[in-house]
Length: 374
Image (cartoon, rainbow, N blue to C red):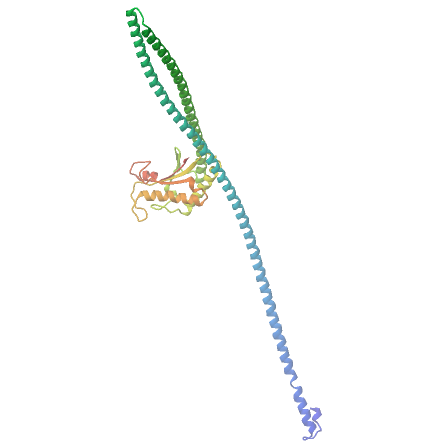
């Protein structure tokens, strides 16, 4: 303003000064705009930094979860490896058991073959002895006839008081024939004695083979009886000490109600847990049974006398059989070999208590488990 003082109004310098002053007035707005831009950039950088921090934290959490997942995968891989090792061991055990079973079957077939051969030979010897006896009887009859003729001839010769040359020759011939027949009869008797000795030897051999076979069968039955007792003891411990679970003779009897609902053959979670313990017990005992014993686990289903008639179970036959089959199928899933299992259904036709009461019905609704020979 001071520069304009003293200059006339129309002076050109006055106009120039005014234009320069207008130019200087733009600078404060430019500074404000620049400041605003800087603040916006700082805000954007701050947002970016916060986003980077959040992203880093998220990535860190993802990495931790990934590490945990990798550890879990490694653990599952290790478990799978152990399971495969167990499977290989079980396969080897099954192969060993199959080989031993085949060997035992071969030995049994060989014993049966020897027994059949001995029996056949004994039959042939008996037939030979019968033929020799018949021939002996024929020869004895011939000797008796010739002796009678000889006696008659001698009597005739005695009566005639003198033997003719023809009579003497006939007598000599009869004597030679009689001697030959006696010699042949002795040979036949010796052959009969030898045949009788062979028959006695064969009979003794047959008796010895039968005794060996009986001893072998008794030994196998005794061995299985020992494993059956061990199996029942472990099974009772696995299923719990319940008063309604009993051992009757060679059978393990448990009520159907602890495995199935009324009129059903479906296994619930609790029933599957019990059967899993049963499968563990079977595997444990089966590992100890020698391969020479051809054993089978028999599952028998029984119902009470109350009738049933549904589309799935037209009678108690189908219900009892379906329950036994359901147990067998679950045991197969648990790793028990199918050729070692048998499912049978008896309906209501083999009751333990024949009275018509609720207690009798409960007792008759049962599953029987039997470890027996095939």
